Length: 321
Ligand code: 8YV
View (cartoon, rainbow, N blue to C red):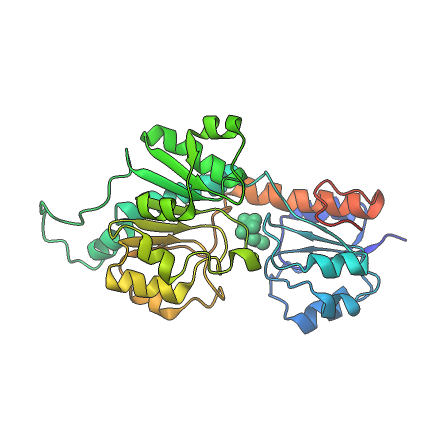
C-alpha cells in the first residue's frame, strides 16, 4: 500500500502526477486555505505533506498527527514551521533553497526601481485622468544609478541583489550576522558595514534576512530614524522583520522618502493605513512568482517528500531527526 500524503494548496498538475507515482495523494486544487483545525483533520493518517507559508506546523498540530514523518515547505523561508517541535516529534522538515534566488532578486529590483521612480504613484495619477501635461518638477524621484545600496543579509538572495547593482554602478554595503568571505564580497563588490553605518549611508536599504525572533522588528522606529530622509526601504523577505506601524509613521512624516514592500505583518491582512499612503509600492508576496520558479519550487518540495519517505534523506532537510 502506498503511503498517504496531503498537498495543502493548489500545485501544478505534473507535481501531483509525480507524487501519485509514490503516494496516495489528497490534494486541494480548489486552493482553500486550511485553518489549523482543518489542517489537523486532513493530516490525520498521513505520513507526509507538501505545505506552504499559510500552514502553521507546531507542537499542538504534531501531537494530533502521530503518523506524520515529513513536512515539505514550498518556500525557502520556514518560519511557519516549529523546527524544534518537528525534531522532537521525529518529523523531517524541508524547504526549497536556491531555485528562487534569481527570481526573487529580480523582483527586489522591480521594487527598488518602481519605488525610487515613484511608478505606481505616477500611474495612479495618470489612470485617474489627472495628467494635464508635462511639468519639469513632476514626480521627481531618486536616482538609482551611482547611489549607495545597503543590503541587510548577504545570503543567497542578498548576493543576487548585490550583483545586479553592478550594472547600476552603485556602491554596495551590507550588514549580516557574519562578514562574508572575501570571494563573496569581491563577486558582489560589497563591503561590510555596521547596522548604523548601513542605515545612515544607504540611499536604498533592502532586506534579505530570514524571519526569526532575532530579526523580529529589525527595522523599527529608531532604525528608520537613522535613515536619510531621501532614502527608500525595500522588503521582499518576511513581514515582521519590519515594524509596519513604525514604517507607516515614517512614510507619513517624511522620515524616509518611500518603501517598496512584498511582505507585511499579519499578511494577507495588511495594515489598512498602507493603502492611504502614496509613497509606498506594494505587492501581494509575489517575489518568487515567475511561472518557471514557482514550478521549480513545487517540484523541489515534491522531490523532498519522495526522498524523505523513501530514503529518509531529503536533499533540503532542515532538522536532525
Ligand atoms: C513563497 C517565499 O512564495 O520562499 C519563500 O520563503 O517567501 C516565497 O517565495 C512563499 O513563501 C510560499 O510559501
